Image 1 (cartoon, rainbow, N blue to C red):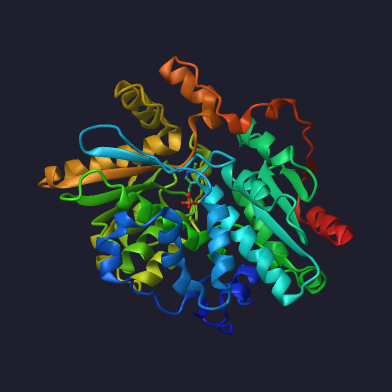
Image 2: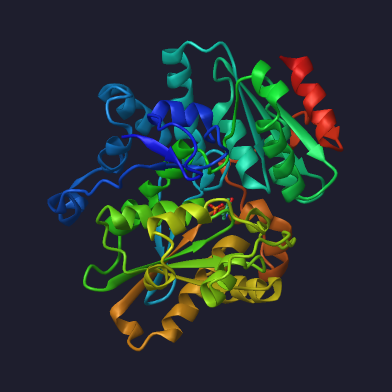
Length: 436
Ligand SMILES: *Cc1c(COP(=O)(O)O)cnc(C)c1O
């Protein structure tokens, strides 16, 4: 499998090169030259396969022979080393819990998979050191820090916006140390992301340092998210009903992986991009004009993205045909107030505690069902992308109930927290040059 840049001005590369580079030299996102089609028998007998076997079948065509079979199997085994339970919320709506990993966010899968592929690629290609530079609006940082923690030959630098990530998220970024450096930026997530982008196009830096990104623009992070959709399909509660999946969206990497799964032959009837007030994609679906916006701060902070980087990949899947895209994808946007009521409503069903991101996913399914003539022929699954404890101060207030701490974070408040503070790009640049 080869990957070409969506700016169409760079050479095609194989899987490992695309993982190491992150972005193509022309600053475009890598995209597979074709989308493989899976064997129909595999899909119809998917219940007989383990999650690891499914993941191998799904990702292997995207990697070809660049990673030997036994190593890829081991990478998958280490990546999917926790559960992905499907929990029924109402008669027709269930949630797939993707937060059972070490940092309690769905990004653990992508980060763990990418760290292992990058580490393998680095060894094969005999580079000395790779610096992973990443901006986070909340959850990416923790998942990436954990996924790369103590991985040899890889330094991780994480930029996060001051005061805009939750307390627990900040602890997850700042308490690992070793090869992980957390930098607090006095600004927004978009400003953090701009600093990362500036570094990637700074000739002086890229001449001296091997830089890569661990945002969902990296194909290893992006594509491994396909696993969720196959697991959701395998465990769907009612095989006679059509499956609709609602994804809480920020940078649109996760949902884009879902749509790729669908193109590979996975029978998902419709996708819902559920967003907070950051609604650039909803506006595009309504108007046909894509207008990037400044990000708006909300209580679902991991989705505060005004100009989602992966949307261009979704457009590519549909060859920029808006009508075709709309057959597969709908979008809904919700305010913080609506999100809070949804958390309350979901809690009224068997005391299920949703986090603000999952709650938005739930609202998306409900509104989509209302828009349909025969919703009883459908079953909905929304992805629960973070553990509610990550947003305890918000959620506990709404449901008036204490959330139990999962084992992953016991003791984190006693660890020593370290961070650097920076204002602008020049400071970051000097730091990177001095460090390497
Ligand atoms: C990152 C994140 C999202 C958004 O995922 P994208 O792939 O960027 O669309 C949603 N929910 C949570 C909790 C996240 O951490």
